[in-house]
Structure formats: C-alpha cells, structure tokens
Amino acid sequence: MESTRSFTIAASAKDLVLEVRAANGDVTITHADALMCEVTAAARGTTQAQAQQLATDLRLVADDDDDGVRVVALQHQNAAELESVSLRVTVAAPPEVAVRVLTRTAAVIVHGYRGRLSVDTDSGDVTARLDGGAAEIRSRSGGVRICGTYGSAQVQADAGAVQVVLPADASAPRVDVQTQAGDITLELPHDSKVEFTARVRNTRSVPCELVAAWSEYGADAGDRWRSYRGMIGGPAEAVMVKSTVNIVSDTGRVTLRCLPGS
Image (cartoon, rainbow, N blue to C red; front, side, top):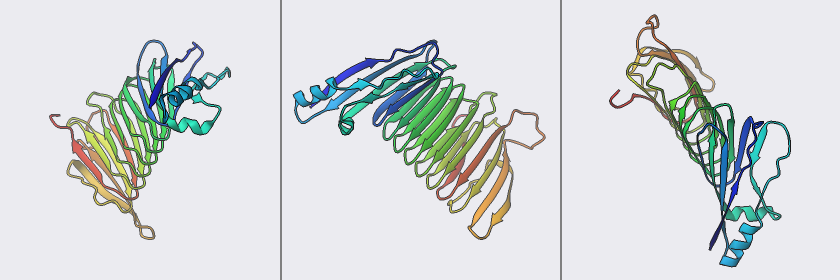
C-alpha cells in the first residue's frame, strides 16, 4: 500500500547552493529565473493505514544555518523507516544557484539547467542535458550521460558506463572522465576540434579513426598503463576553438565517434 505527501521548500534569496539528499526515487532539475523546489514522498506499508501513518510522520530536515546552503531532505523519528519512502524531487533553479545532489539509487535528470551541477550517487543513473554552466558527477555504478552546452564536465565512475556528447556550437569545454571498469563513449560533431589524451591499462580498445595525429607517448611496464594523445578535427595549427578531453580508464572500452548527421 502507498500514501503520498508533498512538501514545498521555502527558498531564500540568500541561498547560493541547493543540496538535495534523496536516498531513492528521482530528482529532476530544470532552469528557472527563481529557485523553486518541491518534494513528493511516497510512503509504502503493508496496510494503507501503516503507509498513511508513515507519510504523516515525515518531516523536512530543519535548515536554519545562514551559510548559503539550502538542504532539502526528509527525516523520520525512526531513520530505518525512510527505506520505505521513495522521493520525487523537482528543482527549478537560476544559474547563480548551484545544485548538489546526494543519493544512493535515485535517478537524476537534468533539462536545460545553466548553473553548477554536482551529483554524488551510488547506483542511480544521471542524465544531464545542460544549457551552460558545469557538471561534476561521481558515480559508483550508475550510468552517466552528459550533453548540451557546458563549460566543463568532470565524471568519476567506478563501474557505470559514461557517455559524453560534445557541444555542436563554438563552445570549447574541458572534459575529464575517470573510470575503473565502465565503458567510455565520446561523441563529437564533425566540425569540432579536440585535444584528446587517454591513460589506459586494461581497456579493450582505443579507436582512433577520427584522430589526425595519434601517438602512444608513454608506457609503464610495471602496471601496464599506456598513455595516448591525439588531435581530433584537423592539424594543431588550424584556427579553431579547441576542446580538451582527458580520459583515465582501468578496465573498459573507450570509443570515439561522430554524431549522426553532423
């Protein structure tokens, strides 16, 4: 049985960072001129009365600190009961408010957000279509996909697959991806220019058909790490805005490919 309850976060003009703590469920982040945040909690119980009581006993975590960080989280007098609560968090934020998400399994979906995004997750998938700003993603096992327009993107993943789509416009982001066992896919438009470096150990392949100048410039024989660098999109002296991509991968496949139709 399930019972829902909704909360509206009282935002302040002093809020510089919105920190969402959601163990499970989903978090959606979009752009807005003013900060808004709503939380819908779905409490589950073996009976309808039990679910309703659990929903009634939920409370927002008090956040009275005047530190510029607005914490969004729910609490219960018995913390173990929160395992039976799934959250749906909706955030609309202007670029000047950074959004930080801490979660175990909640999916994080971003549409058009323009500020500084930070996500730390155990196994929830992260899909971010940005419209400016920057992203920093830490994932233990969930998949990560970043696209849109952004100034920089940093991804650290233990086991999940990572896909990064470079912007098709004139922006030149810096992308840093580090994985332990997940595959990495880098997609780029035909007219882009990318300075690419990779440090890999047990990766199955590093396709380089898009690279004009590619070389293996270092190898650590002791632990089998190999380093590569190359220029994608033309000679180094060409006059073009240049993106920078750095990849470190222990085990997994690194794939470079052009966007369809670009």
